[in-house]
Image 1: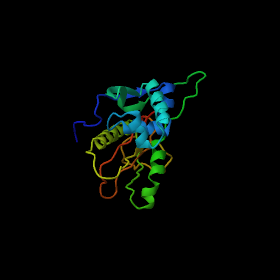
Image 2 (image 1 turned 120 degrees about the vertical axis):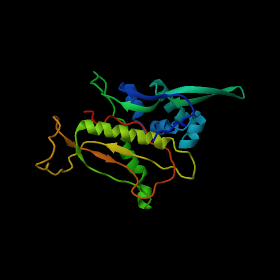
Image 3 (image 1 turned 90 degrees about the vertical axis):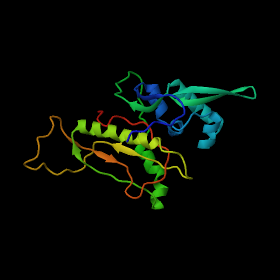
Image 4 (image 1 turned 30 degrees about the vertical axis):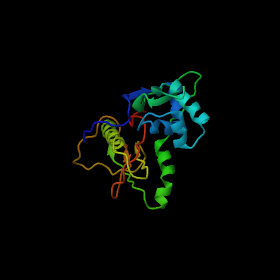
Length: 228
């Protein structure tokens, strides 16, 4: 399905690859992760972001500064209010792609936020209330096919981010694709030869298994499923 993006309300790149330790450190914090996701809808001031996340303005201002220094945020416009200039912040890209991170002497490269762990924690109340839509599948496929499938998942996430806002609830959409040690049946005698590289168990994605939920705010960046 092809749609014209309506969100956010400012211009930004579609995808930016991040590999620098300061950028990875900036991404590896749940509050900064929430700020980045909120800005997928529209540009916002520190005051608006603080009200949305329920944290002091000083705290939010600090984390916005970290994201600015890492070039993950930028000032997209300003507005003069009672002789004070309000700054509206926006993301520098719709998707932050965590690329290949090489060894850096003397620097510990941080792990980014595990989006599936975040989704598992925040979906617990919905699970207990029997309002969680989820599914998991395991399939033995070549790495290249996993890459191609993940591209389609990213397109679906982008489509979800463009759904018209409405209703009284925010719904989370989570997806993941990762190699596992899940068991696999042996190939049948008449099966096609496997790809040259060693195949590994793979995809698992979150998707509704009942009626589709109301529109909501989407998730954020994820690494290449084929990256070592």
